[in-house]
Length: 417
Image 1 (cartoon, rainbow, N blue to C red):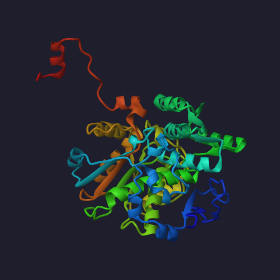
Image 2: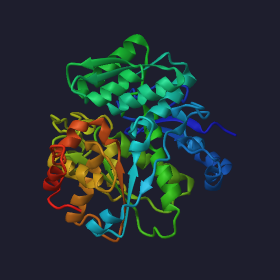
Image 3: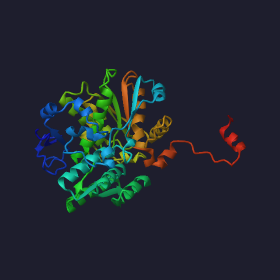
Image 4: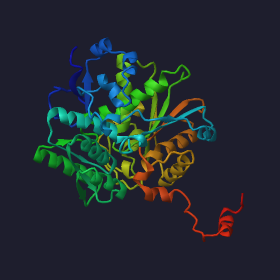
């Protein structure tokens, strides 16, 4: 069988590079790189039925469609990344008047966020090229994912994070044994510093929207949606997918996954993809609204730290994910994000602010008639509420403190029984 991984192609100028190269962005214009495959050979050697029969209960079931050579992390958390549940909360469907609604809960990954998908594939690549150290910049989740996946296989990891990162996320970095450097600055400054360090010390850089293998990990959620949802005959109209957007890599990855499936002839219809940004961190949405692909940096200031980005590093592909699929971008306020945390919590889903942002976007899209209530809809929760308990506490009324007596219980509950 031919090598399925043919190399890299610039998403802007279409220049191609060899698969053996350790390369991040296009040397000619700085564009993000797409990994390209020998699709005819993949289609000849594999089939949906063969993948479904693999028996692997993780993203590694899609190994034939990934740019690494073998399943990694046997007997470790690395082996169980992905294959996250898709819930169908009936009460939310009725509340919104939707016929079909699913919540894909990425908080069920080993380090409790979507970012495990990217880190699993990047760590696999690091092992294949013999990298001694993997480094990343992160507001918390990407770093925790890298630290956790690296710890699983004994890979050294260095994490640059803003000193304002939520304590729960910093705790994960430290517990997983990564070398943690808290930067007295924002995410974008941590990002630039991590690249400088990688260049200076010869480290392998995992940075989101920079390393092309991150996209390949993130695309695997599209494969799961295809396998477990879109293969159902009841889904007759395009699925509308809502996902929160910071640097743009997750939405670009989802789009890449569906594009791969179309190239293979395994997907009947491309879903419509909707990106949702916080109003005060909306550089990509601003460009979408302006009808351009030119990303103008903003001064990000939102409680949704995971999507708080001044200059998105994967903005062009993120715009195309919505524009090329008939989707759109929406922006939501921090108050709308907090309200969505509480709403999702009422059906047993504990989302961090970035995770709840996508649901807030769905609510707004229905108000603006961007989707009909007969359309099938899927919303991503990209991370656990335990990542940012301070934000979670802002979304709900405080607990009631009472004296240790039944009378106090009755008074607090207003009515006994």
